[in-house]
Image 1 (tube, rainbow, N blue to C red):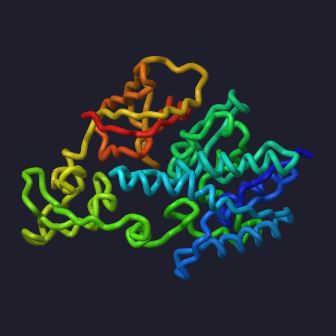
Image 2 (cartoon, rainbow, N blue to C red):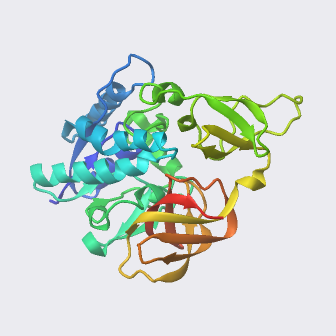
Length: 358
């Protein structure tokens, strides 16, 4: 009987993934990862509740459950980069970094070193084919839940050591399977917030690690509209939390973040959504998930989760920088985020966005 270790998070997706694998005859065990030690005594800290749910799922499925903490490694590999990116005026994506460094990094290393298996499984909505460096990643059947965007930056060989049992399931089917098989988490709502840290008031949380640095909020003509609390707390295209509306009556058009002027510590805003549209970007640290990379090719790309990939042309320069030009303008392309490349449902790879070109 082939052994496999499932990352049990305490949620419905990983629970059903484990159940499906056991049904197929695998010798399944679970591993719960706790990677944030701070317990601030608020409702936003759910690690204890998640662990209890994972324990109950393991008992229901009659599988062993182990626990491990990568708190120190999470701090060094994910959280420090998160804070450094915010302080540099970027908008990082901790979920993508978490997948690369923790879920398909330390988790897989631990399993390979401490068990007799080299195969893991997760509750991600994605489809994989092949093993190791012959692995190919595809979008899941449920496009509204597809998570291939979050996996596009993970090393191909490491993805090839993972099974994705939910590839052909919809979220509705997953919840139904959980309910019919006595898994109490069938109606547990999806987790949001920072990977492994959970839901909390994001601005309040960041204030613990990023000091406020107030400055002026101005429009593109330089007129002062208000005051921001620090450029790190805002992202391109952001509408809520600016507190500059209502100056000309209730019918005034909303304001959006257009630019962070680091030199003058000014937050530039606009009421024109067209000003948020761009066609080109430059990205670095390209992670290819294909055998052959064409120097110039047509494909599709997405610059955020749940975005439908849009047609584009991509090319690489001699410095291994990726240049993406979309056929149609994209809204609020954001440095620090990631671009995922596709050929239909086939994910070609991902890269970190460093510049919006036009």
